Length: 262
Length: 222
Image (cartoon, rainbow over all chains, first blue to last red; front, side, top):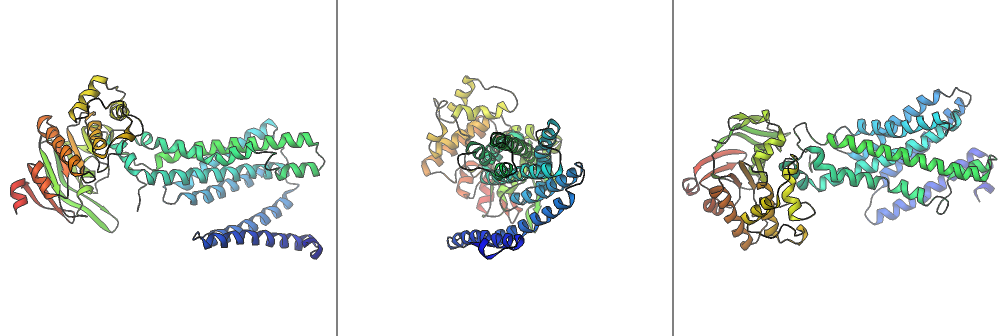
């Protein structure tokens, strides 16, 4: 229907974005009627998301012929931005930005580097940046989930944690059960994506490869490769962030910093 | 004296929780800390095993500055029982072994039975903690703290969540620990009658300051 009205690609794209945004807005209104207010978060996220993707698209356009090493700068900037974004899911947790950035850098960044060196990810900027960004974005989500879960579990179990401390346990041992739960919970979406691949969803990359003439079986295998890389980078990110954050919620004298109302 | 607080205090932004608290805890005595709600009783107790960091003053354990003692060793020597038992999932045995395991020690079954007998729970070692009553759970938390062989036991309103029968059992237990086992107890309570029943000495706290300290009969009569 929109294609019949809008003939220019840019106008059509904006109209399609408006339709998708309207659908998201409907969900927010429905949630608002049940007392769950996401309006501000969603409005900011949508405007930011659209502006960012258009900006990156424009930069990619400019960099199409740039040497591959310039990808390092783009991906590094993405890692820092991802660290800042997911740190916001861990309000009140000391050092959340540093932990998130190190975790995403150590998880997604390391995995991108290894896979690129192995030749699993192609080096041209048009391949490396989009695939790398997928891995960073998923690592960011996993990291946000892990920190958010850890924060809420610690706040809900202050009594148990301080009891363990009072019995002579060190800080790391006292929060260990919540580190484990946070790590497991953060990986549920990545595991479900891998599990439902091809049945529940066929990601865009496969469709793009088919359209650009790749053999269907290779496109399918590469889709699995991508999701396995996403899982590996997300898992490593979550592992690093939960290990780093556990020592940030304790003072050197093993006193719990993160407590309700503080 | 075993434990000595010297001008001890803690402030958080915008609020003084405890200030200028100077007192001592003697061997094998029960010292009660009483005062109205919000007077800083629990805050003061938490400073004694360094669960919170003092912002003023100091604490000495056997005349050693407690910042010179590793926090884990300090908390072994100055044990604590909370208002709620906060038992860890598993059996009573798992809970009693928790403290010694932190130092790489394994509590023998005989030692576990002895501790359980001491709190009136003989034969409870294999019980799952989810099946215990409130009073039983609190007594397990006492046995768990005692498994660390502390020299001082900090008790943060340990009977406030219990019914009358369980409360009487725990009070008897506190007296046994203090007077028979010789473990000094610092009992926080909002119940002056309980302080009179259990403690030799009483410390009264108001707005974070000690306003009276002395023999229970004298302080509580004032």
